[in-house]
Length: 172
Image 1 (cartoon, one colour):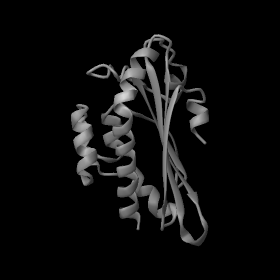
Image 2: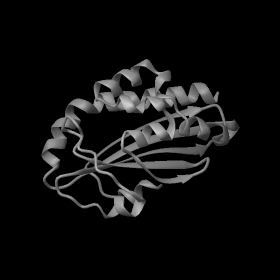
Image 3: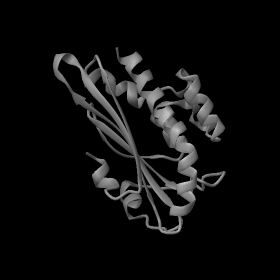
């Protein structure tokens, strides 16, 4: 799992999964091209967070939100990373030029998050699609993020569940 390579230690995590009646080869393009606009719930929640720039969808939409693509294993897994102060109104998103820079970033005032999508083939042409988000907080960031996570976690989970459902609809 790529999470262990990029964020093996973390304070918070959220995981969602579902079975899709399709092959990883058909599902993977649906992940990397996910259109945020196909779900009114996702679109609304991202706009409430001030992430209007995500409307492009796909990996381009994620990078517009400030995510960096850390690694991609075609038809298996992709993982993205984001560094910032997410509990602040503007998020104070930090530019990260490379996966190595993401790993090395060690500011006690920032939080680092990884978000992956992983596909595992199952019998009878089915696939387990999983997404996990991990968050590591610098020493000074932990308190602020705890309060933020208390309120945002249900909505964060809803976005991921909606994304998985949308990917499932498109792939099947």
